[in-house]
Length: 161
Image (cartoon, rainbow, N blue to C red; front, side, top):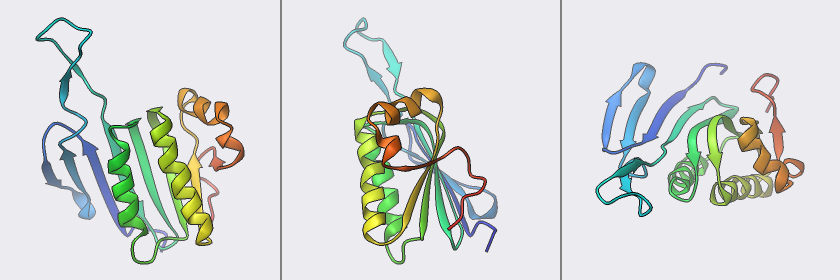
């Protein structure tokens, strides 16, 4: 029960590959948003890297933890929404934890995904807990006053179902 039943690592990237890992974990690079894209403000022929969203999922009977890294924005939010739909289908867990400790950036679209997940959980008598991200990420929760509405924890220690 205390041990992870399912570990999964997903990273958006420039190709669509799947690599088997230990204990059933796997990594898959998805075709967006990690492609190198042209930037109209740059000289023709130059490219800039688009930031990646890293998503690691692990679960127990009591909770599912989605550890996010990189950027959660308009380009990557659909991937998180798809994973949430998969997690919530067929007996959603009592607690969903969004671990933002490795997240570098979140925009309003990313916030919408988190707030929507929280609203669904409350309607169904479940919890969403957000593990505080770096100051730059947490600042948007403070400015929008979502830190007053959402359950935010400093770390994973002490989280109970």
